[in-house]
Length: 408
Ligand code: AMP
Image (cartoon, rainbow, N blue to C red; front, side):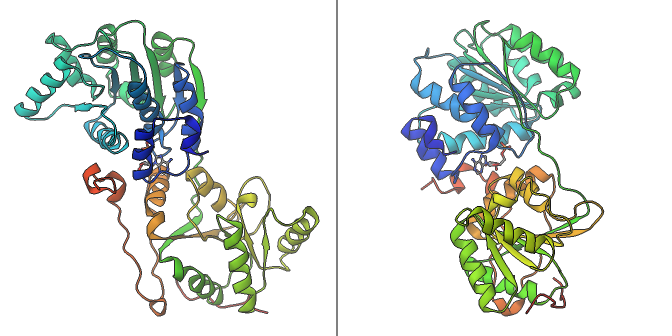
């Protein structure tokens, strides 16, 4: 789904473009329309799913377009740790860069100067306040926090906040808010105590469940950081120097599928293609060939990533970085099925690095980076800092050797 489908304000769209977001993630697709419609939402979504933008985007849009009182804090985002508060504030800065929506992060462990600034902002009223529970409670107790016009409450990583013992602090903060407001609760898990909390805070909430399965441990995952022009030579190199008997290569577009298959055939690899331009009988024929291992290399669009049961694939190559973590897990899940072991290689170009970082975040650990053979030339670096870089740094401020057995 495209972000243009939500009818967001133009200034917000500029921030989305500048952040490099092209399509929505599943949690965004489901949650944004509900928030826009004014519903309370309880969503189970882990870090890495794009949940932050799922609530920030509709909030920013509402603050730009709905009439609201000045000199009051408008939205309160409560999070468990200062690191998360800082990260959300950076996200916020990037997405709202072209708007006049204001925000402040309020968290513990900062010096007196920061406290004075927080006090000033909270008593004057910021559009979006991102805070840790303890620190916010201290400010509220001092009596100057303007809450009378507050319209939105967001609890992020609610399960972690309860595990950290913040229940009483959270309830104290909520007691100081107006009763009529929109409430959103995000949590990676949904234990009984979270349901209880939701029952106390949310009004007839809509429930969204984005559970991402992790790939099996036995899949050997590697990423190659490359330039676009190095992709075809690298596929050929990997296939020529390997013992893989059944290789599935995923491309994001039909054009790349056709081009890569043509190149592989020219180089005398036993490869064929599958995509939606082929009629059903041709697709079935290719699949039968591949399943029976008479065809060792199949190049496919995402049509094949879900649901189709093919056993014994040794290697999955992501010729392009999949759209999101869910797609990545589905694609590489084609290998190492049942008891077998398998490998999954992902080619990551400079443009795709941010998307791949988001996937790594979702997986909870970096995917090991493999060396590209020297004869393919110099490769780009991998910029692990880019996704969390402060807004001012971003665009808007202005293998081993394998023996070949797959050749004809
Ligand atoms: P989160 O789950 O909110 O921590 O987001 C994980 C990462 O995904 C962050 O680095 C975001 O900048 C990035 N992200 C969020 N939404 C999108 C999107 N629609 N397209 C690409 N990247 C995104």
